[in-house]
Amino acid sequence: MTRQAPPRVLTVAGSDSGGGAGIQADLKAMLALGVHGMSVVTAVTAQNSLGVQGAWELPVEAVRAQYRSVVDDIGVQAVKTGMLASAELVEAVAELLAGTDAPVVVDPVGVSKHGDSLLAASALESVRTKLLPTATVATPNLDEVAQLTGVLVRNETDLRRAADALLALGPRWALIKGGHLAGDAVDLLTDGTAEHWLRARRHDNRHTHGTGCTLASAVAAGLARGRDVPEAVSAAKTYVTGAIAAGFALGGGIGPVDHAWELHRPDR
Image 1: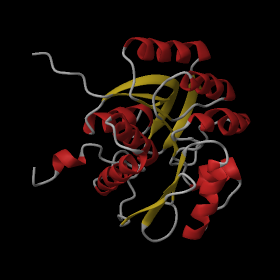
Image 2 (image 1 turned 90 degrees about the horizontal axis):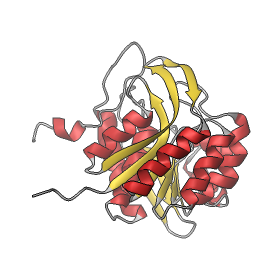
Image 3 (image 1 turned 180 degrees about the horizontal axis):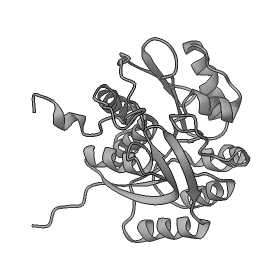
Image 4 (image 1 turned 90 degrees about the vertical axis):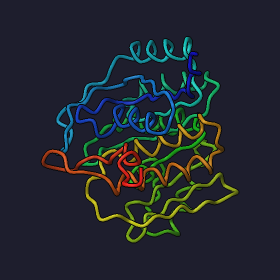
């Protein structure tokens, strides 16, 4: 018998040659969570555990052709976006998303884990006005929230202000990631009415490269499997917390999270 195809998730993002973030992290997370991952490469980076040594965006025509090739033939149950690099790419991808009948998870990638810029300053307005309105869920970290809304988050109370400011830009749900705050790793998910506070113990592990990409991909995988947004985000938080705890050293800098951590549990 031919096996029925699993749910399909498309990532539209940049390539990380070191394998810890970007397209590579997205596809690993999707495989671990039981969905079929597909990709539209928007940019190629020379990247390792120490940082980003170079980045080259692809032409808009190449990005559009990849997207249409996958969506028109294979179809998608969810789309996740990551590094989009330029205003031209942001606007082209936003147009494609607006014409696709599937939930969209927008990870508005601005900088890498090492502080390297992955989005042109001139693209911020396009993210605000074109990309975020297409999002079922937007998943910025605190630096990205500040870039997009001007809200500086210094404590948990500020997470509400940040979420309100982000929702005003058009996504249906805002997931404000508070991982840069002190104490437990706390995130706020809200649609402006319901609030879901997601807490996890902070693990003493510096090897966290790819956490944002991985979380957004896990949310997209949950949505593709038919979960509602709060269920998908809660499951994604649990998955990423485990991946962070199992993160490992690689190279001379910040290593990646372990996308296959559940396979390595001693009780398996």
